Length: 120
Image (cartoon, rainbow, N blue to C red; front, top):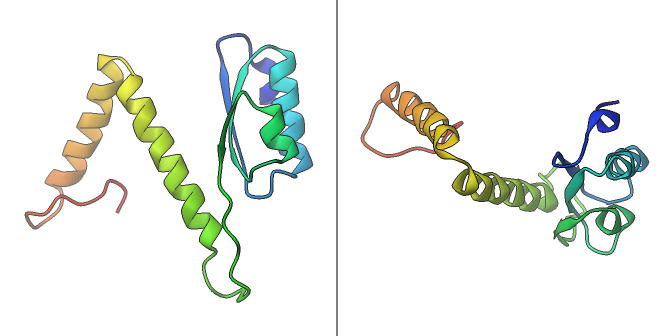
């Protein structure tokens, strides 16, 4: 439903480990119909990758033990983190100030002298 409200200048970010999730692909196609831009984090050479303007692809084989964390999950999280950082560097001053305040206030509530990751 949200994809149908997008317009030129808007951006949809689609994430799918397989690139085959029909609902995600259809949401991107609908957003593109309304001339929104699309970025995806997905597997290479997939229908989702082909539907997006910018493709951030990850090809990581899965470990067969289903009880262990999936390697692709860590790869996807790294890609999303890099996308967030790159976006923050491109944002205007007020957005950077917002991120700076969040980091500052998170840090002053912690003990110790080491900088810790935001969200830890």
